[in-house]
Image 1: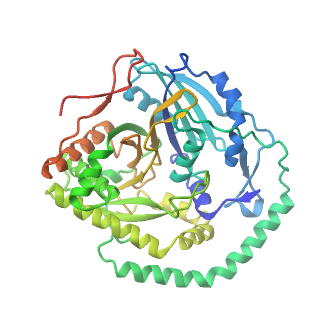
Image 2 (image 1 turned 180 degrees about the horizontal axis):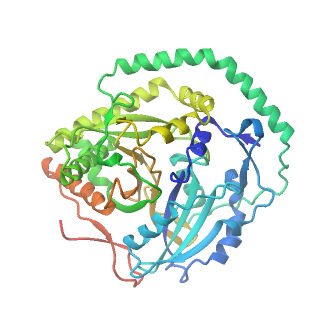
Image 3 (image 1 turned 120 degrees about the horizontal axis):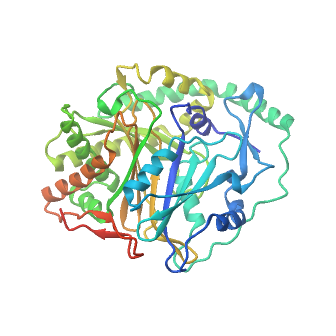
Length: 474
């Protein structure tokens, strides 16, 4: 039994009918070595042998009347793996476009709050004879690092073995009297800690004032990326070579994260110009992990940072350098402020923050950011489950108004995979935006006299050959 942390509860309470708060994790698998596809019956049989490794997989929410904003994680006594599994088949030819369309539908299918907050969809008919495993997982369960650690724990290096970890059948049922006592004790601790919060906010404000180059809260001009929207989502996936971004980072003396955001700034510039808008300096909000080395497979231990994406700069090299500088300053500021203030604030506010967002998202003349981004370092080589190779790993996060465009990047096996989720109002053609990211990458590379990168595209055939090929067109 464990109460949701403040950040976990914030992710839970942010959800509304038009704002799904689950993320999508997609593993494209190649079963050619074993000679047969994965079946749903296999998953029903195999998964329970390993779910003991991931406690939230078999826990549901338990609410107490006086403590609705932050419920408890308790063991689901009626857990049945079949309630969490389904399968679909892509229409031919089963390329990215067809898979992304399925993902857009899954992005708005909210999870049942009476069961553990995850679901798995086995996708058949992926080009090249492949399949995809799509996991919907509520953000209250796991942030990006926890999801990545879960992926690592559920897979191995080639030839490795994944040790079984069956569900513990002896877990004690939840005692609501104990839960109530835990909640009351924590409430008293929070009240005693309130005076210290004032000092924390004062320190954060002082640090912000000494870093004038960072965006100020709720001071960002709206553009078409912040268009009022509804419940529909669109998804697009793609990738760019990790080595190309690393070369840009080296040539500009920046970081991979800074270089990637500089490339995204170029894509935003091109997108806004195509819409007839002034590409002024854009603002991205991204999460900073409290401890990137943590092995945790659950929870949210991140705090947001805001940085300028210098889409206003025509020179691609200067655009990367100045964007990277702002990203670096944003991360440094976040680490100086620390994570305790975010954790405590979200514990105090409960449902207040989400309610304010609902009331103001489409009315505020200025907003926090134009785009939300994430960048996580992932496995350097493809991961395996026995003789099944995970040839692709893509993550989609959350499209939350008023900044409905979210681009999540993970490095995986020499590529940076990208999952773009948005509303059609803010991003009518998400696939073309990812093309602009690739074009921006090459624009910067040309300016630095670096080699351009060919596109990596999925094969049209379903012959069982490699699922990715190099496209010769530049």
